[in-house]
Length: 200
Image (cartoon, rainbow, N blue to C red; front, side, top):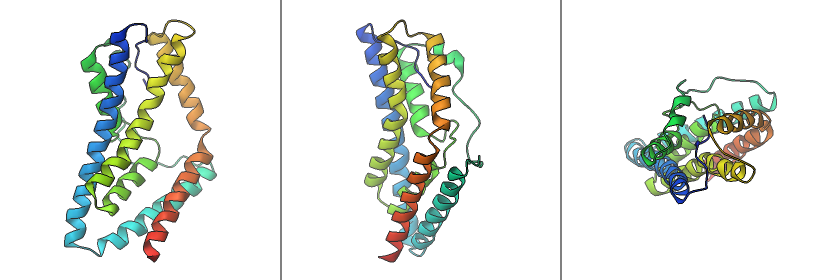
């Protein structure tokens, strides 16, 4: 499920949501920082690899961006594991922390958009753990925001429970399918920045 099944009627529930967002952002930032640090180590030993990483980044971005324009469903390297629905029964702080950490890291659960991998290649190419951490923290926050905003929105109209979380998850899945133009433009922008870096 994409949504944390807690409302915002009690201060403790707001606290759980904030723990979730913090965990997702920190988890993603950690992955980005490690990737940037590995990039700095590897590229210091083999500097010519920087050229090939930028070429690969541009190639992957253009290829998958074009596929998005044609509504092609290309396979994305990813685990098939998703967060189980039974986790919805655990509404405590450790659950919120674990849920956020798994979702923010990205590679621990299913990822359907190649943009995650493009971001990781970018972190590696930039070869800076700080910049990598900052880039991926934006990813983690963006991935957490729907989960944060859904209970707030639902709580204005009624009880936000596991059933409402499932409905929200289904709605997000439908919306995600209609964002192909945004996904393709993002990938083309990443390709453009990689090509620009090659010409410097």
